[in-house]
Image 1 (cartoon, rainbow, N blue to C red):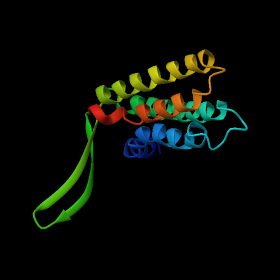
Image 2: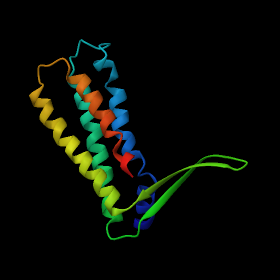
Image 3: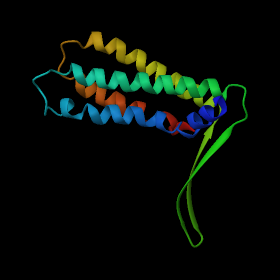
Image 4: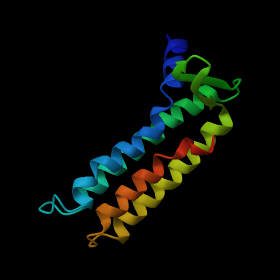
Length: 141
């Protein structure tokens, strides 16, 4: 049971980068001014929730990859004749640790900004941009 759960977490590790993008997309109605009645704070809460989910998911992945051999997830996008477009994701303790570092720093920055920009209407725009930043955690691998 534990081995299957660990394998599932490793196979779904690419979702960790999607949480930030989901948060950024959810904050778009506030950041571009479609929703004004509630103010910009719900946008901040959506993005904070997604960042916390990414951090928790990354922590679970990190615990399962600690002291383990690096693994690769291979996604075949297109195979035609001699053309083979694949996307390979290397999952190791170092890469997941770096992802957790970026996610943790992003979470701390967002918590600080929530109080610092409390009355600023650009709060939603800032959180949308932070979501796009958080969605690029795996870019360095």
